[in-house]
Amino acid sequence: MQETSADRSDRARFSREKPVKILFVCLGNICRSPTAEAVFRQLAKEAGVIDRVIVDSAGTGDYHIGERPDPRACWAASQRGYDLMRLRARQVKADDFEEFDYILAMDEQNLRALKQIAPRHHEHKLRMFTDFCSTGDCTVPDPYAGGPQGFEFVLDLIEDAAQGLLRHLRPELTR
Ligand code: 4NP
Image 1 (cartoon, rainbow, N blue to C red):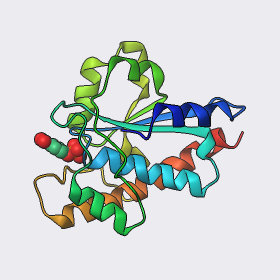
Image 2: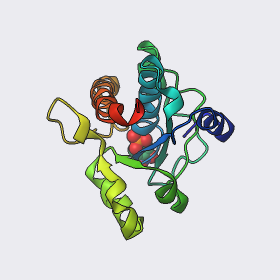
Image 3: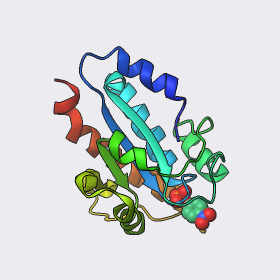
Image 4: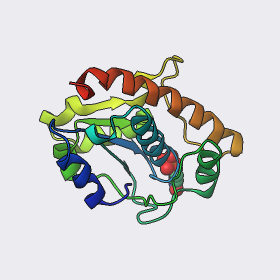
């Protein structure tokens, strides 16, 4: 899920170093991964490294291709200043494994689905997004079937993991 590919390639063109490419992955690409995409993009902007990253998101499932993010995710995100409205759901595709440097799953089911389709030589790119959490949480739970508090909890986790990811990448991004 992304603005447009033209936006991405413009940013990449103006950077001397190759950008670090990050793909956030959940099941539907309408709740967690678009939220992670928007939160990480915002943090990268605030940190002055937006030209050094390409950020995108996708779902392992095909249930919601072309749809906007879930209104509850949009609402929760907007309350914290993140805009999901321009994003549209897409499914993970074979090229993603070639294209992206980090492919970050929201939960174990997403990671298993990715491992089933990833070429062996790209498996090292697959990780849990929560590897970058400071809270000790090991999954970003699916909020789809729950209430609004699930979306708040997911946002808390995503903000924490996104900050950890940015810290992890900082040496690469500031070279
Ligand atoms: P997401 O949430 O994986 O965070 O986008 C879900 C959205 C829709 C469905 C499952 C999870 N669904 O089954 O339709």
